[in-house]
Length: 340
Image 1 (cartoon, rainbow, N blue to C red):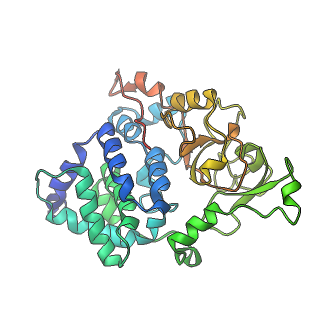
Image 2: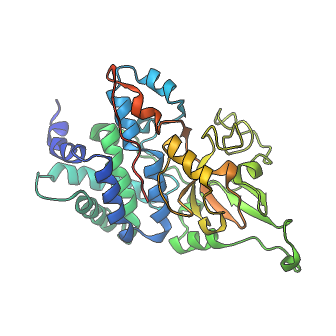
């Protein structure tokens, strides 16, 4: 074992002692410290990369067979996207400083009576100083970095290229500019106040890419509106058969169309009974919130402009994970904890 790995062993051991419920509690305690621009984004990221799914695959004698049983499609392994899984967080632009701060923190880490949330805040403070940025902009992305290490290991985290996946133009936007763009609705023209069902809104599905939008007619479901975008998305993602949002069934039965809501959650209809039930079934989110940060887009109508992020994978791991074969034997595995 290299010296570099040996010196980081206490830090990794510290992180690996926490389970899903510990992380859920930690994230809740951190939310007030996370800048508004990344508060929803951080919760979404943790919903996209659940620790329960990672550990089930890690323990399985045949991860590929388990993945098939859970109907997993797309990029569900964080190890394949260490430096790119979080491009939708504003804090992603500080990823270089985050990685450097984590390496330094891990090298000097000594086992002590420190809580996970406090460790994340400490490392975020160091990264914020290096980036000359407000600490609140680094807390969310630092929590992401810590969870990434849990799922891929510190050595892989450190050895990933670290290249920023963001256009220079968008990297220069301030948090206030991003929040303002998310809150802005389309102008309906001089007599827009007379329009009803024929109002049109813009849905943004990648804030870092110009033109990553589609139009939605007032009251239309997100996925149905996305299908009107006839650009060829399948070349980039086989799940995107029709439009930028993967969708198969149109009635919340397949789970392929789940999305994270970065902005405009209040412009989406409240969660229906079916959507709430199926979200729990798929394992994506278990919450009583009226308008949560993760939605099934095929049955979620909008009445205004919305900013969303499309996850790189989908599956059916909620209840199926409880009875899936793990380590050669069927054993109980807790469902994904509610985050946010």
